[in-house]
Image (cartoon, rainbow, N blue to C red; front, side, top):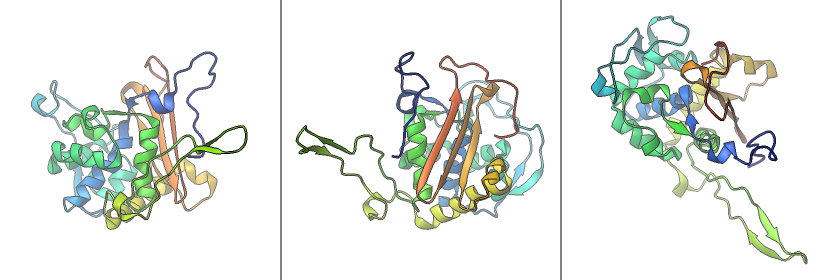
Length: 257
C-alpha cells in the first residue's frame, strides 16, 4: 500500500472512509459480474441486447423494477466489450440473469467482497451492494496481478528506540499460486476490456494523461450519491471515492458511469 487518505481533516472527523465506509459501488461491480460470466462461457465478443427490461419483484427482492441506462439511450445488440466500455446497464442485467445472481454472488467473494453485502438479486448488476474503498482496491488488484488476490497492509515495520524490530509485516505477493483466485486467461481478458474502458469508454478522460497502461472502471449510484473511479496499471491500484458522510446528491449528472 502506497497511501491511504480516509478524510480531509482528522481533527474534525476521525472516521476513516477508506477502511470503514461501506458505500454502494454502482457500476464498479460490473467487471466482476463480467468476469463471472467469462467463467460461464461468455466472451468479449458475445452479443447481448441493450434494450429496456422490466424485472419482476421476486427477482429484485423488492418491487417491480424498470431500470434505465445512465444516458437514457438503448443501442440494441452489442458485444460485451463495448457494453462494459459504455457501462450499459441493460446488458449487465441480462448477463447476470443468464449466469444467475447466486452464482455471481458466490463468485465475487473470490475478490474479497462480503457476500451478505451483495444480495443475490438482479439489482446486484448495477452495484446495489456495498464495499469500502480498500475492498475495491483489493478486488481490482486481482485483475492487475493476473488473477492473484493479495492482502493490503498498513504497517510495514515497528521498531523500538534501539532499532530492534518488534513486528514486521509479511505481505503476500502475486505469483504464489496458492493466492490465485481466477484463471490467468480470465484476468487477461478482463484487463483488456478494462483498458478499453479508459481508451474509449466512460473513463476516456484518463487518456489526458497520455498513458497506454491504464485500466479501470467508473461508477456512480442512483441520484448521484456516490461517485467512484477504480483504476490501475500493472504495479499500482488507485481507488477514488467521492460522497457525503450522510448520503445525499453530489450534484448534476456527469457523463461517466
